Length: 511
Image (tube, rainbow, N blue to C red; front, side, top):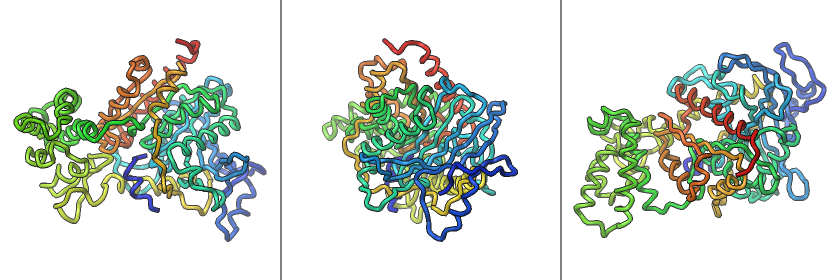
């Protein structure tokens, strides 16, 4: 999840399914687990799971399901275990024929982030306690998620190496096996192949969902699974996508940020009165049109842009961004995101959040060119960390003394040769079943909504795949599902997308 802020902040079992004992609450757990828990050594078992049984009321219907929580190995080329990935697998138990039952494999990003965010914040059967706009509340805890997609698809949440409870098994395992764009894709594809085989899901329609850096991951996995494991997907879902390795250049990247600035300024009521009288969805097309047809070509003229034209552009940018013409001209029409987050509410003594600009922060000094901290991220860590630890231990009976890494050390990370956007295009071109859904929050300043649209435009220059590509925007930020109304509508969108892609699978895969 959340690409560069996670990169900067990360410097930084267990049960065997045998010898079942029945617990009063109906959950099942291995009877020999207490022996392991009694050891004074901190142990990690890369291949052990625990199973519990539950029900959830989703869309007004009671859904029975089992949860498998535990680890499964990553093997090297010689078949030796080099890591164990922690996962939680939810399988609906009142459907016996899995051949038409979809399965969705879920990743968050970072790249050093666990899958916790979408797990207990978005698509899973339980939901953390937050208020309707996504802010932390006490007491911490969790409840049923009435909007979960478990009614239409089984789900597995995967924590890559060093995130969640996932760990390497030996200190001498090279980091290069895991920590890089293409290494990450390679070992996770092998792990998915093992999971699909172990849990007998080869016949099932398959979907990948990723958030933030997870979109880089799942876009690359679509082709890796297809090319090297002959596993063909029905859908890829990108939540708050990164640039997917699609080149922009500094000038283009700068210009494309303006619609996000406009959305944030509209939310904080920093736009002119005539724009504030309009709904956000009415304002943004006007800003997008200006960005593409006026600002972008003009900025490519750089220092040779006529002064009168430059002044006129600065006036329009000020109108749409909530910043002053003076600030825009002093920065040669190119406003960095850091400066915007610091400047927009400077006169009020606040900064705005990076990943969700609805959040406000307070800096030590009003002066400066960037915020002291990311207000939204600290709020999210505050909200998510207690319930995921409580849920895994108390509800899923997964007991370990390991630390659940919300973020883990994955450095150094190799960012070279990022072709994931092109890889997804190839996978879609080869596989007529494969569909793409993109979901974005208008107030996300890290992976902004207009750049998500730009990805789609550039990924398929022929236009021949656009009928299988869909984009949707929401009135929140990076994790748009934290806002209750967007949680409902975004899950309903997933439900519709999965249904459409599976229906397409009943037709022959041909052009």
